[in-house]
Amino acid sequence: MTKRKSVAVLPKGTVSDEAVRHLFEGADVEFVYCKMISDVFQSTARGDTDWSVIPIENTIDGSVSLHMDWLVHEVDLPIQAEWVFPSIQNLIGRRSELAGEGDRFDPARITKVMSHPVAMAQCLQFLRANLPHAELETLSSTSEAVRTVKQNPGSGWAAIGTKLAAQDYGLDLLEEGVTDHDNNFTRFLLVGHAPFERPSAQLRKTSILITLPEDYPGALHQVLSAFAWRRINLSKIESRPTKKKLGNYYFYIDIEMSLDSVLLPAAIAEIEAIGCQVRLLGSYPSIPFSK
Image (cartoon, rainbow, N blue to C red; front, side, top):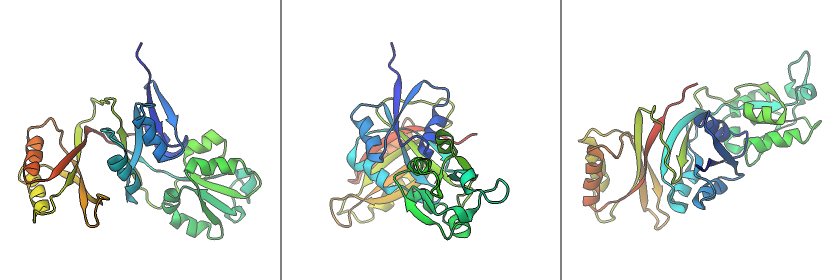
């Protein structure tokens, strides 16, 4: 009998939860909810789950450096897939408690707004324009904020979180889509040793880490040249400290090509020939968002 696959993910009701449900829609997969991103990583690293869901980049905030460092320095979990999902935040509370005239909530009745710091930052324009008087408090996740509002009736508190969290905790959507930018998408990685395949994914990507030799002037130029003359497209290149020596960096590179191609292994071999260290993080399907 085939064992049911399991996925570690941030708390129920978060954008990560919405995203993983979208990825595995219709599949028989168990979701294992973890409070912290370190718990998510360690669950799969220990073998308790088959995969971990990692938010790695956001349209507004850019790369999530903490999560990238975990992937590079703390665990050895290959990337099995990437996909993007909209990060849509909403103002959540009890409409009956906060209602003014008619059924619409009265912003003046809200005394405090709670959320995850990243979600809060993505909604600052809305908060300044509509709730300048309200105290802002950050918690460990958007779902934790919604749960806290649920547990404190009559307080005048509201949360910024997902529709899913509002449904789970039986609260109202006071205002939908309160993020400051409509194009707020998050890129997620599925990491783990269990293979994952999505035949419908037309684009395949490869992610690598490159550490340059210290005594080789112009090494980064040669690295980029190895891709350029082969017309290999790099969708992302980012430097991060190696944490070994001040001023010593590695380069994280996303490549729009599968490792199964002829050109990419040749480019990597050329890079290694000049003394660079290359670490493969994964070669995987890239799944675009579709409603």
